[in-house]
Image 1 (cartoon, rainbow, N blue to C red):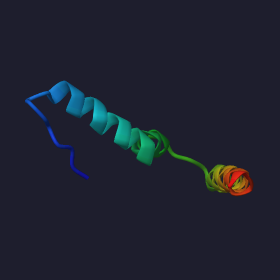
Image 2 (image 1 turned 30 degrees about the vertical axis):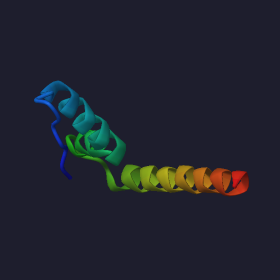
Image 3 (image 1 turned 180 degrees about the horizontal axis):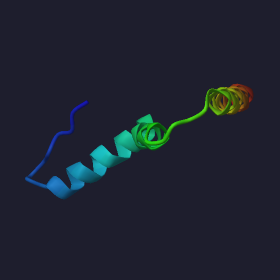
Image 4 (image 1 turned 90 degrees about the vertical axis):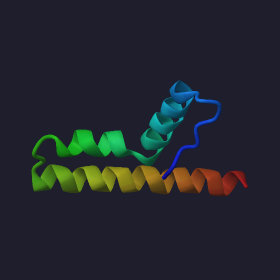
Length: 64
């Protein structure tokens, strides 16, 4: 990933970088990895995330 800086506007480039990192889920991933997660909790979280992703895909599929 790269961010172009136009007219030495570093503040805007940092804002863009943070937005892209948040969109990719990097901050959430770092937060999840900062503490130990029991395997059972990890499995339930993955199932919950997969369900949310599946429902979201179905919602957008119907709209199109």
